[in-house]
Image 1 (cartoon, rainbow, N blue to C red):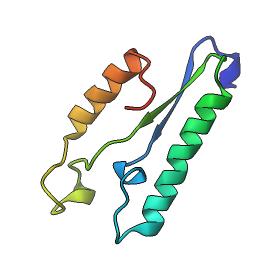
Image 2: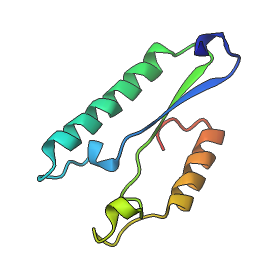
Image 3: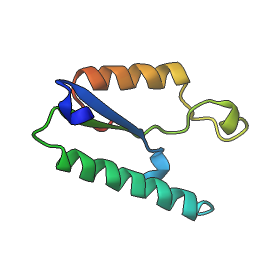
Amino acid sequence: MLLLRDNAAIVNVSPGLALVPKQTASIYCASKAALHSFSKTLRWQLEGTSVKVFEVLPSAVDTAMTAGRGRAKISPDRLAGEFWRGFQRDKFEI
């Protein structure tokens, strides 16, 4: 159980579409917005415990799934680096 650990973390990944929805993907965006809300609420519920709740909110990531979709994508390595830096600084929304 995470609450029994001296240091524990939950990391949720909510695509940027959770914050800026896309007209043609309403159900997908709404489900990601729900994950964003859940992450914020869980962080609040676990305040004062040893469990930290992080949320990664990336823009489009250059993967096979996003091939041919737009140009402003970040690499998986850059996303991992940004997450790691935020994690080390207790930045809960990255």
